[in-house]
Length: 82
Image 1 (tube, rainbow, N blue to C red):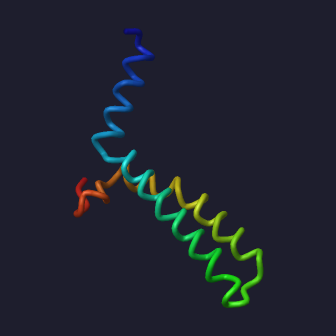
Image 2 (cartoon, rainbow, N blue to C red; image 1 turned 180 degrees about the horizontal axis):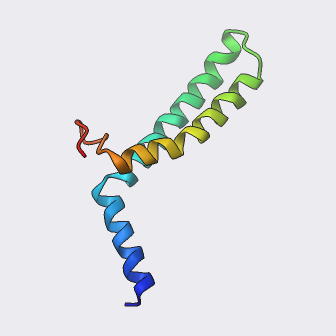
Image 3 (cartoon, rainbow, N blue to C red; image 1 turned 45 degrees about the horizontal axis):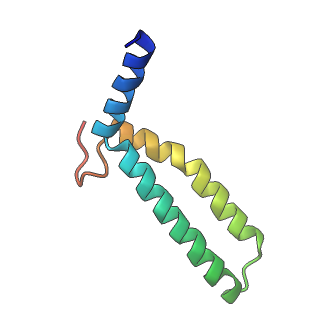
């Protein structure tokens, strides 16, 4: 393996160890549920249509923070470890 491949393999192993992939999948699932609930509840509460777009933008912008927190702290495993 070349140095680049070793670095990539090491990075992927680190991401798996810190449960970053699991955090991303959970974040995507919860974000999808929030968007679906907002799509149903929004019209019932007579909310403007731009609220749905705002929720989507906030969720998209929040994902990098969730990834960084998952990488730095093991937040999905139940208790935070450093």
